Length: 448
Ligand code: ADP
Image 1 (cartoon, rainbow, N blue to C red):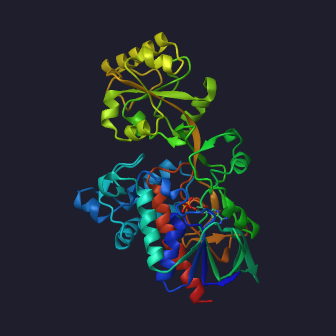
Image 2 (cartoon, rainbow, N blue to C red; image 1 turned 45 degrees about the vertical axis):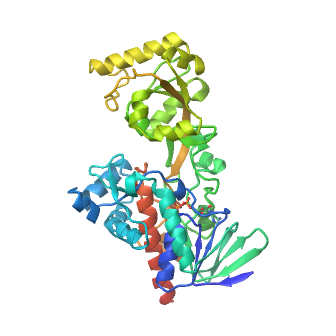
Image 3 (cartoon, protein in one colour; image 1 turned 180 degrees about the horizontal axis):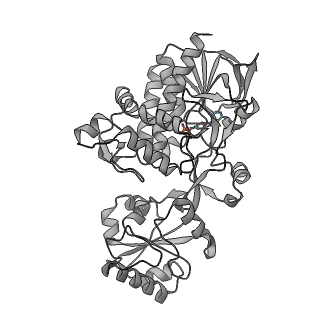
């Protein structure tokens, strides 16, 4: 089947849906291709919020955040590998992204600290509810009310070029093949965290890792763009999350460690600073017997952290009335576990130097029954690399020039997060650059 539109958006995650809504608002006809049976991609799994500086909510709460501070935190978090011009563009447009979300029906009223942030700048829905599901539902409502078509179960396979410009997209549907004729394409296919072969190609150490990603995150957009000459950057920058329950791929939030949990190996011993950076802790866990570890915590922590209830409901937490029983439940020598916890508690009560130089999440001892354990190991979480774009979200070719008619936004792109994406910046990236990609596509279509 042949479909003619001004712009074809590939991928119905956060970046793609944002771009589609804004392209339609700019007067373009739009179709979205989505290979999965539903929208949302990795975006729907986002648990935190969206970072932004200089917002009305921050002003209302007296938070003196600045563009410079947000830029500096992002660069530091990314180990200065980031493309600073892209970071600056994201940050300078972040407050407007919050205003836009508000205008389309997704007000954000909750403000908190995110990892690596100097000021409270993570904006979330009322009560700090997870952002992913909230914005995906808002986007879907807008897409429906604006009459934008999403073709589900339809996988884009090739971007067509004619005389050096984008001219269309080929796609495979469940029942039929499509040829989309369009002047502009917005690539929003997400990352490649669920593509084992591709992950291994760029970082051998990550072979065999599980992933927190949705199965659609296979890097299709990166390959399609490379096929028409796009340059890629930072492909070897792949972020793991250190504590993921493996059977159900449930990510155990860093707050569990931040609030006081420790990690022990099969010998019942601690082995690393539990609050070290994601990738280094992940490596340490993989060096342990069974390439996994147990998070150990007590009732006090459960009472402080509501996320624990969701883990208990998911049936992934072992619970026991004393440490000895807990140790037996997880096949660890009870005396060893009791000794490890006693040493840990002593460090806390005596404010001593920790064996592994841990300095945070040491306010409470592990001392109130019941006691809990969750078995965890690392998993692929975010791919920082991807196609190169400029501040207009134009895709850059290997010869350094924009590819005419090709725009990209979100995890499919590289350069914004450098060597490490900090919490709250993924959603900021997709909303800001999704909007920019749409505006650039509209300008391109109208002037060609
Ligand atoms: P982002 O956060 O950058 O928006 P997401 O992971 O949320 O990325 O969304 C990317 C979406 O793109 C997913 O829904 C995924 O299924 C979809 N997708 C990936 N590859 C293709 C493809 N070849 N054709 C159509 N959709 C695709």
